Each structure stands twice: as structure tokens, then as C-alpha cells.
Image (cartoon, rainbow, N blue to C red; front, side, top):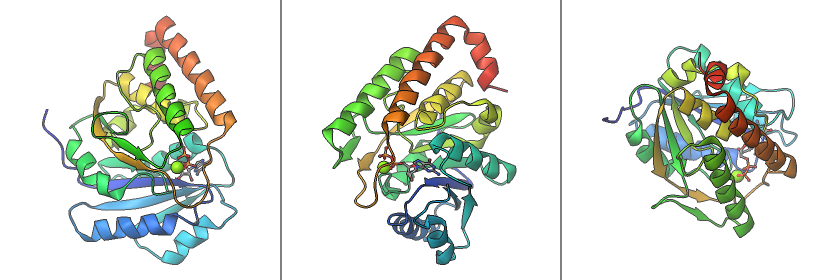
Length: 255
Ligand SMILES: Nc1nc2c(ncn2[C@@H]2O[C@H](COP(=O)(O)OP(=O)(O)O)[C@@H](O)[C@H]2O)c(=O)[nH]1
Ligand SMILES: [Mg+2]
């Protein structure tokens, strides 16, 4: 299947206390946008960050950047679902990119990801754990957690992908419109696993692109024990439910 050039993209960036990192990322995206090869807008989804992230973004006064202000910290999954709903209500996008605000997902990797997009229902996954992919400055403990998490999800959900917890992705709008986003359950980071599973149930073509993940130089990680426990519990539940009731699962996630 040949690749599809994205016509108009929305880039979603969830933020919680990313005042130290977001301006730098938007500057890089702005330079990339100025090259003119791709048309995109950015939606920052901020959970009322106490460090004033939303105000910092506002003050930059970039016409191509909008902010979705949410009342309080509600988790990554909830933030992304709200972001998807907002960009899908604007009928001009063909693809939606998701990326972290802290610089871990490199703008330099976007062209290769764009080039890999397949037509129709598609998900393009920035992947650390394949040949050509790598991580920089990530503690061994986090590497182990990420690799183990993916391995477990791969086994539990029977999805043959190599980075199920990563958040650097491109979804076709065609795929997102086919999903029951409002019926998704994940609050935290296991949202990434749930979306990969839903894409699989919707018959999406999945393409893995090797990326270099660079650990943040500023700000702090929002990863927590609660997020890990939710991921473990939910993945186990989804795995059991996929085995016991595969059709019910499909009806739950796919319109
Ligand atoms: N809006 C919103 N963003 C979040 C929340 N939790 C994490 N994020 C964002 O999700 C991205 C990944 O979080 P990060 O702390 O870097 O996680 P790590 O890379 O796994 O250590 C960053 O852009 C965070 O600001 C949340 O509850 N709400
Ligand atoms: Mg990070």
C-alpha cells in the first residue's frame, strides 16, 4: 500500500506544568511549519497548570496555535479525548498528530512519520523499541517499565506492535471518526494502549516508524504509581474481555 501525504494536520500537545518546555517546542514547530512542506495547526490541551503554561502559550500569540483550557488535572487520556473531540468538530483536518510537550518527541522525526502514513483508517506509531529507534538520557528503570509495559500489552491484547505505551503518533481522521472515543475508559497513560487496541479493532493499518526519544531536560515527569497501576489493571481487563467477548469489544470501540 502506498503512503498518503497528509493534507492538513492538527497536532495535539497535552500539558501539565510544561511552562519550561512548551515555548521551545512551539518554536521548533514554528520553524518546521515555515518550511512550508506541511500544513498544520496546534492544539495545546492544558489542565489548568499551576505554573501558567496556558498563559505562556497565549503570550506567544501564534495564529496557528490554539489552547483548550480544562478545569483541572484530569489525566492524559481525558485530555486527549477532549482534544480529539475539538479537532474532529473542525472539518478541515485529514490527520491528527499526538506528541508530548517536553521535547521527548522530536520535530525532526515528523517528516519520516508523515511519509509513512497509509491511506484510509491508519495509525502511525513513533516506535522506540525497533531497529533504528532509540532513547537518550532515559533512566534504566523507565526503559524497563516501558519495555515491560509494551511486552505485557502485546501479550494480553495480542497486538503485534513494539511500542504500545508511546505517545508520538499520527491517526487518520478517518480512523478517529470510526471510534467511539466517548466510551473509552483510560484516564492516564494507558490511553495509548487503549487507542492502539481500538485502532486494531477498527481494522486500521498500523505502521511503525523508528524514533529517537530524548528524555526531558526541563520540568518533571508526571508519571506516577497510580498511572502504572491503572495501566496494569486496565490492560489485564481488556485482555480478558478481548478473549471472552471479542465481538462485544468491537461494538464498544468501533461505530
Ligand atoms: N493535559 C494534561 N497533560 C498531561 C497530564 N499528565 C501528563 N500530561 C502531559 O503528557 C505528556 C507526557 O508526560 P510526561 O510527564 O513527560 O511523562 P513521561 O514522558 O512518561 O515521563 C507531557 O506533555 C505532559 O505535560 C494530564 O493530566 N493532563
Ligand atoms: Mg516526558
